[in-house]
Length: 224
Ligand code: DC
Image (cartoon, rainbow, N blue to C red):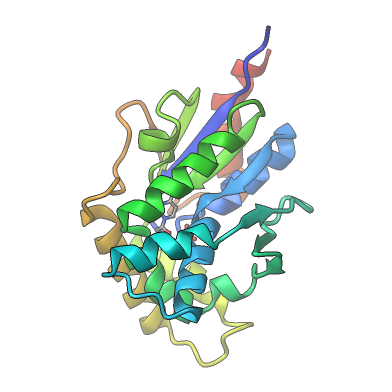
């Protein structure tokens, strides 16, 4: 009987986690799950419905009304929130500004982790996020912890955002990243931290091809 392989990729915001995760999944024919997109979709719902994050009852009620689904096409993230495609909207600044605070809420995390664990139960998957190797899949066969110089990360994200957010500035992106790093690493619930058995991948000076090769060298031996 063969067991499925789970590759967990954690790290700071805009470190290239999703670039690596997508490339790995494509190369190995694994399913790619962008766990950050799930928290972003929840944040979008909370924003639209004006959910008071300090009101426990409102949070629990809202979570009951949120139905998320991934539709995998070309290894890109296509996520629906109650049957509405929200893949583009969850990348915009209003969501980016709120998502860390919303992903720090315990009830939100419990629900998302449950859904994520279900996805990795029987299939080969690559999942990226902040707590994948520590909380969601502590037994994942391969774990990567990604990091890169904060300035390089801000420049990368700025270039990505500019086409759809023409008014954005590099400073704004840098600030947003710094703020999210702070919130993600200092929150009480499942803070971003490296699992003891995670392989550190600092890609400041790596091309996407080099980082893919680095990761393949760790995962492919498990597939024989
Ligand atoms: O990876 P991303 O930037 O799209 O993630 C959006 C936010 O969601 C990020 O600020 C932290 C949070 N997140 C989390 O808390 N746990 C995860 N597994 C994935 C994302």
